[in-house]
Image (tube, rainbow, N blue to C red):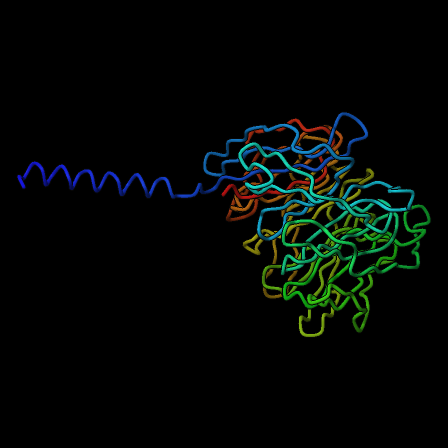
Length: 391
């Protein structure tokens, strides 16, 4: 074989190797962003965007699924299915909302277009469901029914279909705010990091109800003690765990505050530490908080103020769990509802419900401060944001 011939074969082999490697390399830093909305006005359901975290480029993909009031979304751990609670009061003549299951995998949906295919829907077993999340096995979805004042667990089948509830708990009682706390109003439920317990946040009771969760059959049984109390009239809404699993933070809607708890994972018990305001001292207007999230680094906590229309930034002492208010950042819109930190931890997306826009901020990794990227998405009545990796 001549030298030129050997060189040609070597070049061809190297070129082929590079080509095959490039073809098999999955896209990195590329995501679909799904947006849940209220559909009383212009919105028709769930909307989708394509997001490239490397370039921060966003591409609108339009309506992903037409469905009524998909106010909160959840993505299963396999990233093949998306679930929504339809926040309505009546379903098939019963006082109930709906849990809807959608496929987003290559067999039933299309990750490139962001389209969703409805698999099935079941009754949420309470009016106005407002939150849904998965247990750590991905086999069960947990739902909070706001007006119904109840929580329920639903098994999820391998093909993504959602089954009838495996557990249901009706909360009972009231608290001091006669307009907002005349009865129970479950607003959030998730399992603990070890999946042994489930915590339900009830705005109407000023309580965090703690249940033992059995991942084999999807059951809920009261823990001992069965709850932790908030200040009367606090109106707890959402909860966030610190990445170290030692601390829990609850945003209180009616009090515009955050309460820190120490968490005993061995017994599923919460011990109240301190409550801090989400507002500046000189603010005298009306305000309701909405969302709370701890940054993946564990160094910062964010909370949304509706009225003050800001994201409040707190620094976290990882040893004591203590919060220190650092600053407030205008959301460039009205009534910031849900916000979401992207999977890279570099960006924070804020859904401004009453100005029909989502504003994107860059997060400073050193101090958590937010800087607007000048990217704004036009979405009617956005209330929930969820990312899915493009695979």
